[in-house]
Image 1: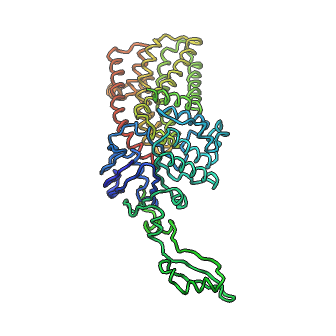
Image 2: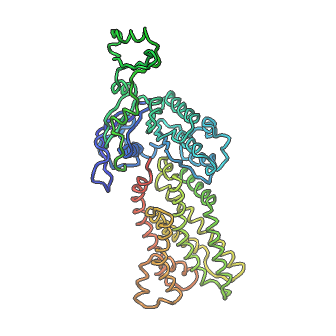
Image 3: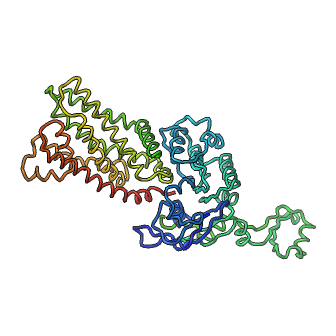
Length: 286
Length: 241
């Protein structure tokens, strides 16, 4: 879907490059996570991919055609879900959607989208009367309004309660199952783990790691299991290597002769990987 | 073309919902008050001056305020990632501005025609108001690009008023009379604007009318190039996602 080769970008007033040679591909029908601390170039990369920033170096192909050769019709193909609410507050939800809907050749029925996001009952309320969570859901409705082939989502579940976050995540998965492609930017590693087929970690304008969440966890995790068990009136714990477990007599001794309280594999979390790979610190604004 | 229609209708709807049209009507009522309390019955000579003040300052303010709200509510970001062109976006705002200024012209003219005496060419005035609105809409875009807050926007409008409007008004009312100064005023686009409005009412030299129209249209074309170029930077600045 997208093929990015040796992408470089420098903001006009900056001396240092913000993007320092990114190369990656996004396959059609996948959910691709773009992760990293604030200021490492995620937003800049997204701005370039949605043609807001034009003066970049390198090559970007969208559906096999140079991105620079696309005109405004490119926006018929993509949907952008912003983190902050982007609605006319003194218009109702339906008035907002009717206005934006008419800017596109193809569009979904706004009422249907509002029903899916649980906003149908409030369709005639002004956006100013909406809660933060409702506005976030409206952002998602707006992103899907033009039946996009590709979605760019920035923190799509930020500020939502678990129930509404679940609705959004199910819709994202449903969108992917229908052939849609998603670029997702988020700091919520739980969302990444649930949704993303592949993730790219960015640090200092570069991609430092790119893989599936599962492979990343295997790659960065310890292949160990920690067993907590009763030893008389005391609690003891021991760590065993998963690789030698089937031949580990001490492990079998513990399991056979003691009451096991807990047993955990020492699998790492994406949060740990995020911090390990990126340093987890904010850099300059981008 | 279809997007232009959608943008224009949306613009009118928002001008109304955000009470910008209402504010414009309040200003029109103030101008009516000025006409009402004028001692003379024939308001032909005062009329162009009131239109001048309205078509210049209100054009700048309407564009600035409308873009200010779009920026505050981040709807500019949503518009930038839709299939509209920058030309469609700008033209829809300029047409909205022209409609608002013509609304004031019609209201003032009707009042003057019913309650006072007035003798001027309304069709010429419509044309001149359109020319002035277009130029001052461009100034509105420039100010909107450069203003980070509502205060900065207002400061910009006030600065423009002091530098470009007041000297021209002072000349009109006879405070500025020196030949050098009055000749220098021809450099101001606002002088051109007042000249062409005056031409619909009283004796203005023909060359001055041509100068006024050509100067304003020429400056509008130049400014439109600057504004179109600046639009890319403005979009990039406003579009952090």
